[in-house]
Image (cartoon, rainbow, N blue to C red; front, side):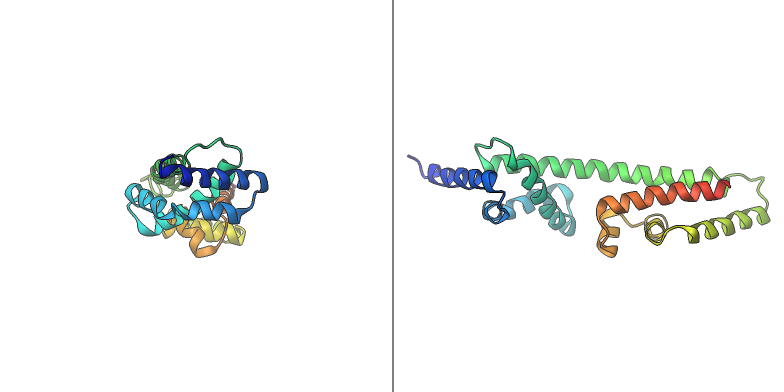
Length: 188
């Protein structure tokens, strides 16, 4: 029996105990042993301490769900793959988000001919900007806050979550719905 087997047996016991009970304290013991490694992998990929710290928590949430019904023989290896995949998806979504943000800005402003058409008289542009301000004020508070932070202050979803305490899904929803409501208001 090698020195690695008892640890693996202990881990297998904790995994089985968690899968049977769903006890997060049991999972916390298991995850806690490797949290510093998860942070290190996140730091390697995300290259940002704050984002890496956030990722450690988000990965734990993924582990809660993923380990519940997975057959895991080596927790450390499994956790490394989960962490690496999480970071890669985060990087992809970050790039996607930047592209999407630029596309959204173009949609809101260019679709409504605010800046791109030279035929716009100064008075018309001022009128359009005034209308945009009025439409912005008509949004629900959450939508208005998220739209302003995302487009005007150039904050990321994560930064908005940190600053507002809204859930990440809610932030995305507020921005999407706020953008749609602005478009409808501007076109009316």
